[in-house]
Every structure is written in structure tokens, then in C-alpha cells.
Amino acid sequence: MKLSSKNCGAPRLDRFLVPAARMGTVWVAFCISQGLSPPAFAKPPVIKPSASLQSKAVFVNTSASFTVTASGEGPLSYQWRLDGLDLAGETNQTLTISAAQPGDEGDYTVAVSNRDGAVVSEPARLWVVPPSTDFIKAEFTNEEGRLPYFYILPEGYDPARSYPLVCLFHGSPGDEATFPGMAATYAWMLVFASYRQQAADPAILVWPSRRAGDNSWTGQYLQQVSGLLDKLMTDPKRKLNVDTNRVYVGGGSEGVHPAWDIVGMRPAFFAAAVFAAGWQGSTSAASIKDVPLWAWCAEDDGQLANTQSLVRALRLAGGDPVYTQYNTGGHIGGIGMGWSTPAIVDWLLAQRLGMPSTAEPLLSITSPTSEGSLTTGALSLNLSGSAEALGQSVSEVRWENTASNKQGLAHGTNVWTATGIPLLADKTNVVIVTATTTSWAPAFGGSTTFTDTLTVVCSPMRATLTWQAPEALLNWSGGAPPYSVQRAADLVAEDWTDILIDAVPPVTLQLGGKAGFYRVVGH
Image (cartoon, rainbow, N blue to C red):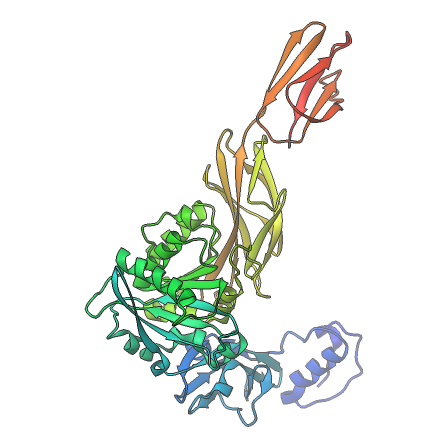
């Protein structure tokens, strides 16, 4: 068989013969050796996203498995890896762990190869969590009554060391009698207490519950939970050494609205929050907009509209919640997928009270200001900034002015610009810039959006020029400093020159008998 270099653009080769079955391999090897792209007929395997190969949580001593679904010209070979290291003997399509131990926790990938190449799967985290019997049940009592709660301390808890505290509201049905059973069923409820997580960033995990027979989170319960958190930090009999800059709150399903409201009660208390498929509480979005927040829900979840509504309310109020929406997963699957996503867990624990978020995914408006507000006399706006998502691709960046309902697509992704954004005069314009990236759940699909918001006070400048012989008084309002006063002798030529910078109104102009035109230029 005669081979030609035309297929890969290399210099012409001498004639040589190879068996037809090996032609693809030889040709790929040649192109690689020449620093060229493999030929078009090279077909390495393709991995199909599957629910059997994405992040999950299991209880210690229970079984766990991952299965890869791949296609391509056979034979296909498999090599499983844990945290990037090959697992000896694990070369089947399915990896099975009969009784998961702390050492089995980590990020699993599989390399699938054939004669044309190899492809490596996206990492899937296996969380190995302690049994729900490790929960310690306790009670808090105040004038509002009795509040049952459950908590887990880090292994080897050291009273001399401060720890973050994660307070999570469970959904419904659930009370002090049924909640431990819920936790025993859904291992993802305990990912913050997983062995690897506690070794890397140990935290105190607290689950408030309801008295037996109660099925709703009331205002009374919220007052009690607030009192419980204070007591855990101050009561000498049961004082826990809590890092007060790292107190987090979250909830799933019917547990979202109490988490929302307790943030509204104490927005300066919580460093960040996470909401899984639920509805907002009675507190206004404006009262909690400055608390970093990540929410998620699946499209086939009955709470989708409610979850979208709370995210939208926060963004309209000037907040910048991260939002993941899966294409599928249902109520339980979608909630569990979010809790099992390392990016969400890491993001939450990276937040610090009173400090701007620096954890990705992160979109930043950097020009014309990196502050959250801007006053201008202009009727349009140019923005630029950056968007990063933990090394994942950013598919697009869009802008929206909620005052005018105008929207548009920015140029670029990781580095982006948005030009000519129209502003409404004499209005407060809220401009939301939104980037889109992965959902971190290949089998469920979907996407994650993250934002930065700029509040623009559009205050057009209005100037008056009053003759006060032999001078003139120039006065103005609107716009934003610094102001410059400029003069031109001819409007057609537009030969404007600065006659005064850092001007403060009113300004007396010495005319000197010369005719001219004057204007004020603001920020």
C-alpha cells in the first residue's frame, strides 16, 4: 500500500508498505513525530456522559461504583485513576469498591484508549461520609421553646483551634424523629463531614430540626436557630470555637426559605449561603443581596420556577448569586448533585465575612470602575472585565440593563468588552453582566451562570451661562466629577481646549471681549 504525506501536510514520504489494520496507528505516530495533527481517519474513543460516572457520596463501609460508557473502534482499553494516579489492576469498564473507606475518597477519572489514541474522563468525586449515627442530638431551649438539633464535630476536635460552622436546614417532611433517617438515606447531606473534607478543612456541621410532629419552619423556629448559633459560640458549658468570619448557612427544598430569612435577619453574620431547589422567604432580596450565594435546581424539578425567581430577585436587587441549572435530575437528584459538586463546596468554604468573593466562578467588571456603582452624565456605557470558572470554558458573556430591558452579547469570554450599552437619563440603571459555564455534572447537563452588577446613576449634565458684565457665570448640575471647563472659538472646528480642570460650580469666566463657546465635561 502506498502512503502519501498529503493526509497530514508533512513532507512527502518514501513508499513503504504496512498492513491495512495498522495503517491508522503508523500514520498517527508519524504525524505526532512531525509535530502535526493526526490525520482525519484517526478515531480515538469518545466518552459519553453518564449518571454512573459523576460525583456522588456514599457512607463508609458501603459499596460504590463508577462505570464509563465509551464508543470507538475497538478494542477499547481502560485505566482507572484516583487523584491522577493509576489504580493497579483497575482496567475494566466498571470500577467497584465493595466497602468504601476514607482512603477511597477522592477524584476518579478513567483513561479509555484504542489504537488511535486515548481520552480521559472528567473527574468524578467520591465522597465517603461517616454514618448518620455519628450525629450528636442536642436541644436548645429559650423563651420561644425547645429546639432539637444535630451536630457533628471534626474528628480530633481541638478546642484551641477555631473552625468554620455550616448550618443547614433540612426539607420536608422532617423533624427530630425523622431527620436522622433522611440523613441515613441521602449520603450527600453529609458531604461537609466527609473524611477527606474534614481532613482538608475541618468544620462544625449543625442541622437544626423541628419538634416531633411539626412540619414547617416558622418565625419562632428562626428565632430559636439564631439563638442556638449564638449559644454555640458563647455558652461556657457548650462553647464551640467557631471562626466568626466563616459561618455559613444553607438549605434544600423546604429548607431554602428559612435559610433565606435567617440571612435576612442577620446579613452581617453569615459569610455565604447555598440554596438547593426551593423558594425565597419573606425577607426582601435587597436585605441579603450582599451575602455571596450559590443556588441550583434541575429543569425537571417542580421548584424550578421558585428557584429561578429567587435568583432573579437577588440579581435585580444588585446581588451576584451563582446559579446552576441542570437539564435533568429531578428534585432529589438535582439537590444531591449540587451538594456533591466539589466546586460548590469549595466555593462556599472559601468565602469570608465582609470580604469580596475571590473564589471562582467569578466575573469582574474592571472598567470604567471596579466599584459597584457609577455616576455619569453619558447616555451610553462601555464596560470591560474578566470571567473565570476554575479552568472550565466560558461559553458567552451577556449584559442586561434592567432599567430599559435592553440586552446584548459582549465580545470575548474570559476577557470581555461590552460597548454602547444604552442608559436611561435621570434613572438608576442596574447593569448585570452574566457569564455562562459548565454545570460540573456532565450526565445532567445544564449550565452555571455567574454575574457582576454595576449600578449606574445616569445624571445628565445641565449647564447655564449668565452674563454678569464684564464677566459670565457658568453653573451646572448632574454628571460626576472631576469636571473640566473647555472653550472653543468655533463650533464647527470643535477646537475645544481646557481652560480649567477639577472645576467646582459655579465658575466665573473672564471673557476678555472675545466671543467663544464654553462647555463642561464631567466623568
